[in-house]
View 1 (cartoon, rainbow, N blue to C red):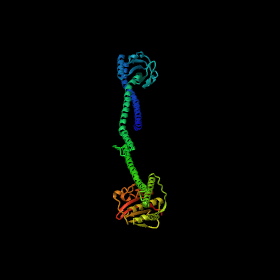
View 2 (cartoon, helix red, strand yellow):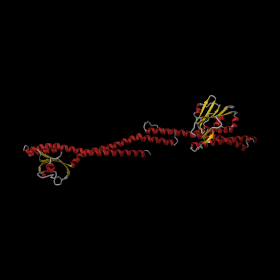
View 3 (cartoon, rainbow, N blue to C red):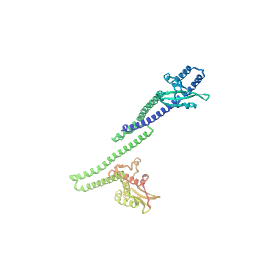
View 4 (cartoon, rainbow, N blue to C red):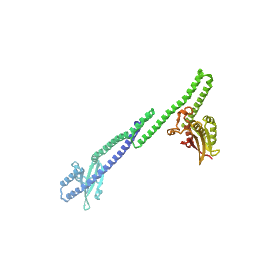
Length: 470
């Protein structure tokens, strides 16, 4: 998927960008070199024209023969690879370097440019010049002046085709170099893309597939300090979270299965015993009462599971209103009077005033106080002491639930808010679902408040905060 999608797109994009860049550079270099070559050619011609002028003036003064002059221009023409004509003041040719053009001897050429030459100016033209030259040439005309008098001209020209042949090799070097540069760049991009991007992404993709197939312990091992390395780290963090969630899910299913199977097994056993006549008739009521307790335990577990499911699914809605937390504490203590007496515990309720109004959901706050009080009753010593207090400090109300039972071990403090966690499994196996404190923390968190537990010399304190209204 990565190789057919991301890699091909990236390689195509980079190839197009590099190709366009090198094509533009090659075109610019070709254009620049052509102009440079022609400028150098012109400079070379102009430099050699001075020597031609010198011998021409000697010829005109009778100091040199026509053959000598013709030999000189032939030599110079071969040296600069140009054809040279000499014309008189009327534009008639009287000397040529290339014998193939001997039919032009004494013919008048470039009449239109003659006036420009008489003014002492050079000219530069390109064209086929039918009747004079049948092929396209580049012509340079240079006047021969003697003390301000026009004596004739030097005509130097090159075939455009010949100039093109000279430039062709340079063009080939430029464009072949560009093509090799494009191919080399593509190879380098391919190699480094594979090494830096594609292979790491393929490894991440492979590990992701294995995790999706259930191998949640797999991780990506990449040594890279760039964005790919950060992606690998983020992926591993995600994998850690998935592994943790998978572990929690399995533990949750295992715990729920155990918690549900235990009361169902008891209920089934007692009812089967009654139906089969194994249990004496006079004890049927006793065993039915035990089955009833197991059903109540199962009901509590189901209700807690529904609450936990609603919390984790984000469907746990709160109806915030003004609530008297002191009144909730009083009613909860009254409702637990029977359990308190069974434990022969004493309960002290301490308030700063008769009422303490806070912002919260009444039903959920009842659930919080109920779970915390129920937890204290389970762990308080036989004949021990439970204390519930509410205090007002600034804009906050602090509610504490204390029991003088055994302290919570340090390793248990780290997990006390976890689902199904029971610090003393022997004492709470039948009395607790292991979800109460987890639900309490989630409710307080939903209210954007804090809750914590402390071990003190005389017992254990659970304390949470609420926002005051009055």
